[in-house]
Image 1 (tube, rainbow, N blue to C red):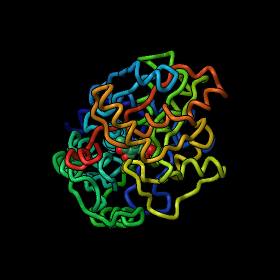
Image 2 (image 1 turned 90 degrees about the horizontal axis):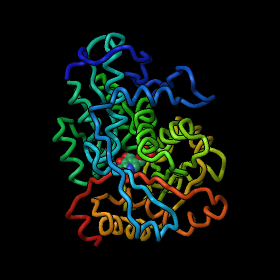
Image 3 (image 1 turned 60 degrees about the horizontal axis):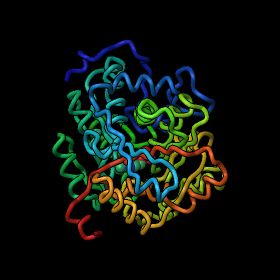
Image 4 (image 1 turned 180 degrees about the vertical axis):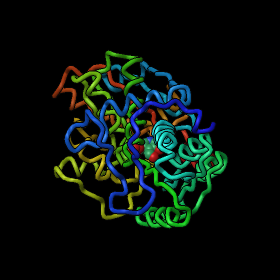
Length: 362
Ligand SMILES: Cc1ncc(COP(=O)(O)O)c(C=O)c1O
């Protein structure tokens, strides 16, 4: 689809920068933002208009068996059935569409660049393809092969990089310089965060009785967008992040009251949440996320198996993080603090798996 055919009239802030200045992830300063937050509810609503008709309105699934385990009613938002196999397409389309709206200010043609262990890479490649924009994706050399193949399938150019955060950033920087590209960060770009917030808009439209939403946290784009939207639509709602114990930077940040990075590369089967939260997502998480529940590797695995078996849904291990959290003792204890949390929405964030790898886990 050509950008010139896109609807116009939305806010025209350029959210993304072409070069490597310190303001790499420039904040969108439109109205309605809380102090220090880079995204407002208005941004999420704009994102919903941009992505409508281009992404799936994913269904909600329930399971009485899992309800019993959790002691609450659970509502699973099946983003594993989303286009490109994860929620990531929401933020990617919002970001690329917004760039296209600002094409004149960008002085002509541009390409998009990112680093991703797979899902954001696939999503950005697909979004760029929709708008005829070239996409270069720095992918860690240990990323699942199915995710690499999918990025290529959507027309993205895959550039392997060292599988550390620094390795990803360095490669991304190289690509920006080489191709004069614009970075669409997997979780810190405001347009990406706003796009992910549309998950909460749909969930609360599908079930206005939700008392809480729980979603896995990596870089925090999804949980931040969800918190911004959900708390505006329903101020009483609780928003919880779920995180592997082995990658618990969000939990530590909340504990310490300041952004805290891990000093090592995390090892977890939930490969999509190895990333640390960042400077744009931390203020939102600090102010709007009610708690972080951490889960062990075995709990993630068992939760993933339960969803496969009981809901007949193909989810990747990272989706198991939120499920593990909601059926864990830690969450059960949270109930004692707040009896009002009866209906819980859980985001099954993705379903991209390498069958040859996953079958060894069963
Ligand atoms: C399937 C899946 N779940 C969760 C996440 C974490 O999202 P965020 O980095 O926005 O916290 C990702 C990120 O890549 C993902 O691909």
